[in-house]
Image (tube, rainbow, N blue to C red; front, side, top):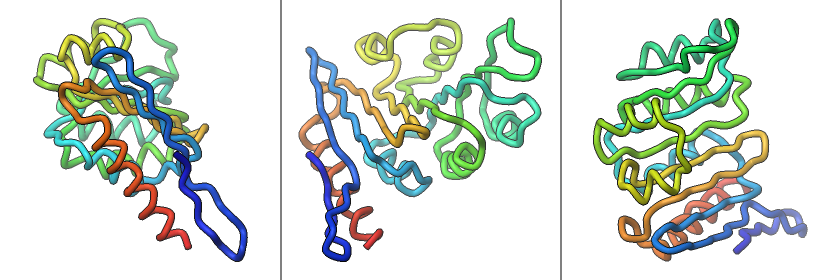
Length: 186
């Protein structure tokens, strides 16, 4: 489904939702999505969460973003052998700091990041030590959903277990979020 707005007699596209299901796993992709703090938060707020485990690759160790992550995170982990200037980072953060963190991520030169909603505190340890396909983490119940934000491609990919979330209801809510964002642009 594609969301359009009529502006000055011309049709403008504000997002295209594509869904895919395989077994118990549902994936929803939103293309042509303007990645702003408010729009990302609107999507994230469709789901309940207390804490999140966030993954960001290739952060400059001297950047403001890196310093803020170290300050706001409950705990963080970096691979042991890294470039002296850049690092990948996995960290757990309280839900109350997500908006502040999103501002910093979007102001930085970050191209993408992933927000994982954890079912319990052991998810951080598992996500920071093992590298599995997100679908496997969701099947195992380690995380309930994963939201990959690809800033430089204006895309968001949401993956979740259909036994945890109703896929049709999530898509319906996403359409509302996109329609509201479309109205606010006019």
